[in-house]
Length: 265
Image (cartoon, rainbow, N blue to C red; front, top):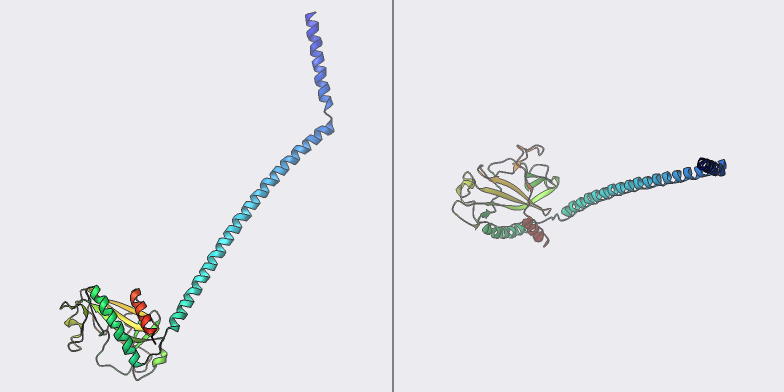
């Protein structure tokens, strides 16, 4: 009797299970599969869309950064052009008397600076012995600077910059501090009478474009009034030699002083 009951129960459960399976129709199974597939596709498409948006955003940021860099570079170039134009616009056509006044005023200012640095300064920055008929000039980043015009070509207008004057800073052998009369002997004696050439020497050249140019000398090298300058041959085309080039001075106070002096004219 007990075995018969178990058998009946098993048959009943099996029948219910089969009935349950038969209750899910084929079309319902297909619909369920389609819904699952649709959800998967929607999820995949959403992920791909997010990835595309992320890539597009990164590209836009990169393009924006490159554009900003290009704009910054262009602005920097334009600023440099404006500064160059401003430098050119500060160029003054000074008379000989005005040049002397500017040079003397700058020398007085330089004497104070030399005193602070325990150095001497003189206006004997340039001189030469016997020469021909050519122009005397200096080289600079802005081209040749006319220092002393000759009687031969090319003449004043051939030079982009013209020297107003200049000075030379040095350590005096006799201990002089501030303004010094360095031109106290013969030209042959030159700087040897009172310049310590084992110490730094700096020549300042004042351009009529409002720029102070500097040539660093000394430090164990023989230095003279010729250093930094040369003469064109009488044909006005070739120099006897190319001199040491002046650089734009990093002395910002000197640059400001010259511009201030030129502003009076």
